[in-house]
Length: 335
Image 1 (tube, rainbow, N blue to C red):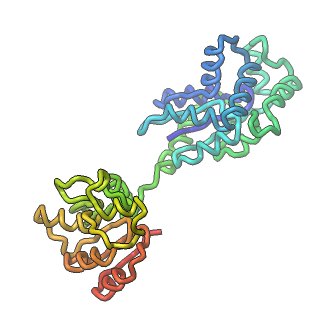
Image 2: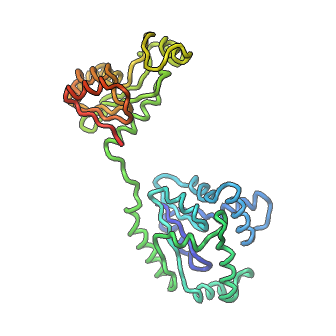
Image 3: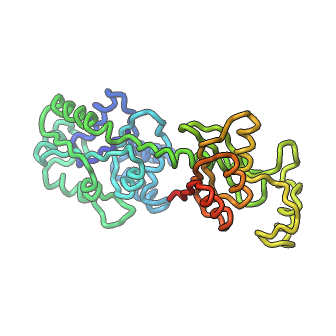
């Protein structure tokens, strides 16, 4: 999971990040990304320069540039905390992930001012008026600039930090406990799981026609796979061995015309033949194919005893579709 942390001056963003780090979250600060950029340029690091360089990068490379850089540091299976999120576009990009949560850390103005006084940094505001003026600099109508208030409104969780560090820790631990299971990626259903595999299988295609893939499945187990291309041991279509494909790409025949012989096997054909080659029965199995079957493949599907065809794209062959229907084989096209 990724927890994004936003909030105003001295609200406790860093404290939340430190607590999460102790809980084995890895910390990525957008401000640190800006500090790295300033170091590359040999410039001094001040709060104003951080604001300026951030606005510059957003104008030049898109308002979500820092979020994109931060996501490059994410590793699968690890938890991360992102801090210094200051633009709604950054949040929008991060929200494309199902495992992202934005939390807004809040505290009363008086409490935040007292923290700033104790911190006693030279550039920190000394009055509530100065505090509000400073924060106004980080709220712009420019879509590529800092918009702290707009970011805070998007947050799905609020951490009120007016009390002790111990209380804040309890709140952070509860936040993680409440959200850790909600933020898990949803698993694909079986149909889309197997179709995604068929989509990968088709990438092995060595035919110059459209790439197609198929897998035969029984009891949620893959029996065989197939893609369109030349038979085993035969020179690939993509190097000129198929007269029909070569003629079609030279413009001598149109797609769908079979006046020239085609040496390529179809994806469904290969999947069924591979099962037979390995002595695996396809009776009662399901075939997932990236295109609905042509007439020839429909005939093979019928005689191979398959009970269902699940496809992704409709191939313009009404005869094949009618054969499947007459044989009592269910045909579904996934949405």
